[in-house]
Image 1 (spheres, helix red, strand yellow):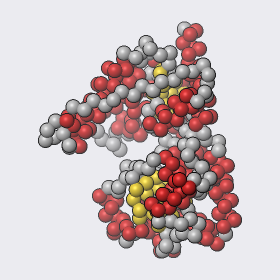
Image 2: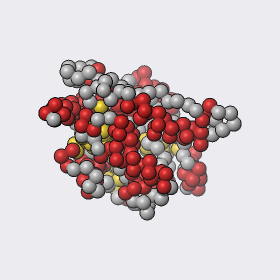
Image 3: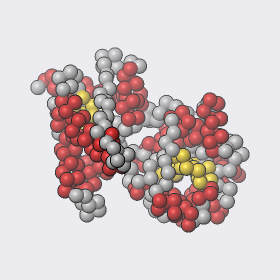
Image 4: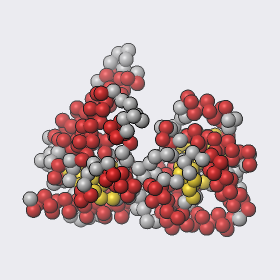
Length: 374
């Protein structure tokens, strides 16, 4: 979510709207438990500090800012509790998905203790009281409406954009390090399947690994690159069981320019998730000229359009067939593969942070105009 804040702020800093002066409100995290002896290095201490800062320190700090600005934009719905400290008629919030609220919306699917549900309810209550809830996709907006969380007249859709570094144009300063990182020499190298994101259950890393194992039977030279940190213990075990671990490169989250260079080296980006609010790697990959195969979800079709290929969520056979087919096209029909790349580039051109900031400017002005009338 920091990316969204940074991109919006940069656009206003570079003159997106001459009459808007933007500031980032991001206080430093106060560390208490993590500085204590013995328990300070534990995950419990770190999580405790995060909880205290998010639910106590940050709201108190922000309350003192309420009279300093004409409008507030909370760029992450999971910080909806902050809206309780701000004038609701002058506050907008971006909703990236409803996964944060799953313990309330689908309690049978995600059981949580009472204190956690109470905390989540406060976050949700803060979000729905804002003057505008900005959804990152039409799919998220539709879900908010279906659950009757916010009336339609207080909802807006503003798509995310691809980072400015996401480009098909070669950048030797980053392409060469990416090649060394991946041990790749370009078009003649073995096909690289790329996945970017976390390893939380909804990302379906299990499907990714099963698909890769099936693809390797048809294309034994294929490799999988995963960006976003290490596998969980269960995922690591599955990769070993499937006999593909030695063909997988696991990387941490990368700085933006290097990540874009990795996208350019990939043969295809896979997005096998069973739930997304937007699916940023889809549009980032396309902007870099990398074809995408994604789960057949409304939101991913919204983002990927006709330029992406889609498979039913969890259908390993369909996924492996699609991936194998694309690899074969890359090897046997470079012109057709280049057409897929170009279609991706053309589609991604519609998703920019400049257009997002322009739409946000309209929303800001609408909210302020309404406030002035009142």
